[in-house]
Length: 171
Image (cartoon, rainbow, N blue to C red; front, side):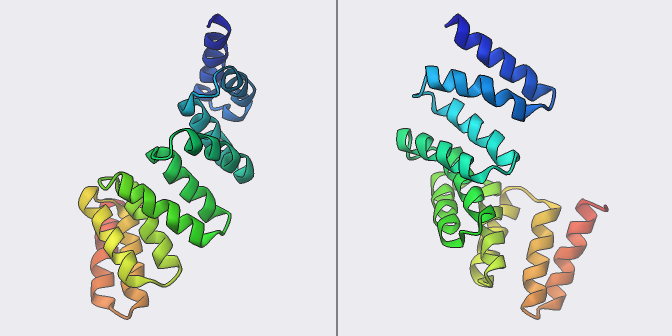
């Protein structure tokens, strides 16, 4: 337990000082000591994701999801990883599962909506982006909705959302 606590403390210190990739050695040692600790596995996955090591993130997330298949954060992150890797169908499946697991997650709805927008499914994009806005208004979501409406030729609606985006974030 003492060694485990030391690994966690050292990794925490590195993460707080914005040196997350350096924390991996300590996190992995702790995870090897406690492989059932899915939260630790998720943390390792997040560090790999931030470092754009998507294969390593996927491997770790699979272990987490084997231990806890209904883990929202792991499911959501797996959807993001699959999206970044260009695996659109797998990303959609994971993101839909994440939305089912936590219907009040603005981030999950926004990400799924942006995926649908990217593949040209305006109806589903607007459904999920609209839900994200209801949960938590944000400039990026207004911008995405504006872009979907613009692509659909609905310029008046596009302008409304783009204006709202700039009101929320003038930058």
